[in-house]
Length: 212
Image 1 (cartoon, rainbow, N blue to C red):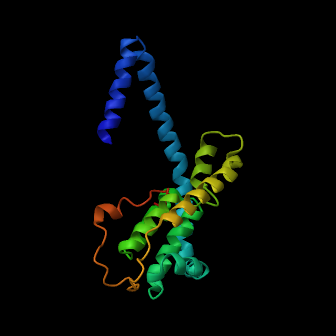
Image 2 (cartoon, rainbow, N blue to C red; image 1 turned 45 degrees about the horizontal axis):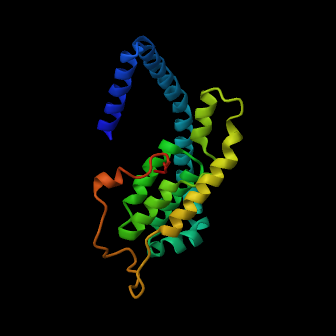
Image 3 (spheres, helix red, strand yellow; image 1 turned 180 degrees about the vertical axis):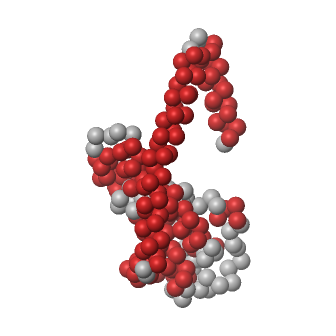
């Protein structure tokens, strides 16, 4: 992927130089770099706010409440976690962060949840986190506000609809236990995800999202 971006960058610059637009290209690159820094600084406050709120909610026991509220859904999607309340709470907290569209703030929660998952459960969690159902895409709203959008919230209906469709597809194609194979409670599964795949969980989008 890095090679592709480098190739695109130098190809674009080469074309600009050939057609005599080199000065405009370098000026645009400088302006974009400055705008990127401004946008990043504008998002720091939002990430710090929501990350702190998630930490406070966890300390106050709200994550356990979220796990209880999501228990019917989690029992259906992750039957192997029924006897593992710690894993169920970690998954519920990560999903809650995705629902709030916390983006980068949701990534550590997803990584923590992945530590408790093996095999099909890890695959399913990755799929659902990547689809990143969002009821309140706070990171996107913050970006639009920083960019000067007149009405940052006018994208809410389409964001909810699109992420809901993606999550429905993720649930539909999730890996399932084969008929005739009894669930093993999450113990004794032969495959664990290596560390580099744990780091690849949904970013913000995670993040995503996710959430990853």
